[in-house]
Length: 217
Image (cartoon, rainbow, N blue to C red; front, side, top):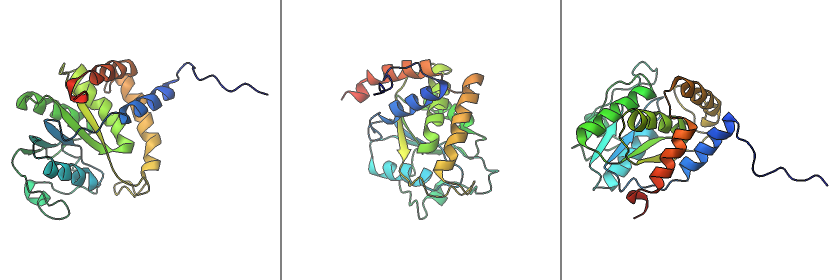
């Protein structure tokens, strides 16, 4: 009988990405306890707005809602304003302290803008909303911009947007399943460029995050 594979093996680069995703999605959902909700819109996906707005209306103690801009050159781009978000299907009611960036070229620009807002508003914690297929790369990008480049060690709580992976993403007319390989390749590429947090930096931050009062209340 063949012996089963060892449970402890050296990690490949792809193993590290899987490990980061598993540890990221194991964090508690604490969007009701943070200072601000941050959503990163784009690709014509309405749930990037509706889920964050739903929590914003539900959790009245959260002080700010940040909408970190989208690439207005996308084919599915639509103008975003407090007035447009007050209409169905979003029905935004709490318009005070909603801050909208109109255009962001890419995730890096969304992260840099958010880092600036954190400094300007003296935010001590945020929740980051993104589709599950995109959330790991987005989180690593925000981690790099806010923590490792911005030197602002605050809890960043991941919130995967709840959606069927078979729903078609309008900009690419593809499912979330189809988006994953491109996300993995981008993480490898941007890690080499220093645009996203490294595996070791991610580990350091996650160890730190689990020790913070927000996660131990």
